[in-house]
Image 1: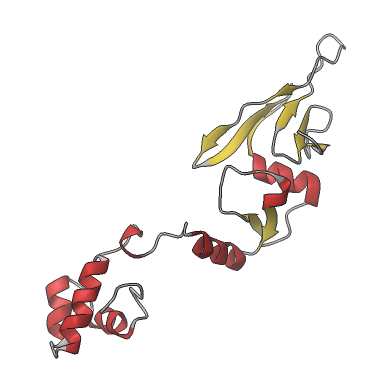
Image 2: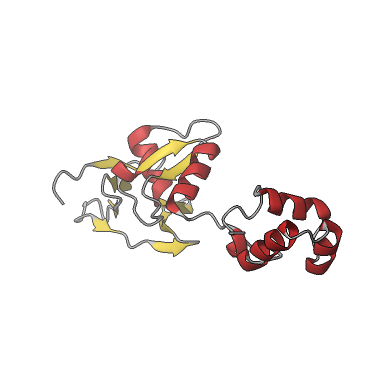
Length: 172
């Protein structure tokens, strides 16, 4: 990989390095001789690649994107988290990673379509079709209290669906 730059993994200097392409390698010494560095194979945990690092006194599983930004961009700023700019959790190239606020992370999820919305959200009680049905029924004069009872919703939720502040993608 041309232009690949290697940096020591923070707190594991001399043992592991991380590259600008998102790869991690071991720099183990055996019998005082440094063998050829070994590229570690990451495992996916909740969709994010991790590697397991070991020393004589400790062992730790670390997310590669955290290692990358710590090595190349410095410590994580207070209140920030890792952003994958293209929305792909497994793309840990330096050009795809930045520290960012939770608000920026939320905007990224919306832009990439990775934020569960509508019926894909785990807490959804209705579907997009039911939201559209509620809007149509309300515009034809059906009482909010009746709609709320029929679909097991509160009246305020029905008002918000009709106003478009909930289920905004459902068409009337």
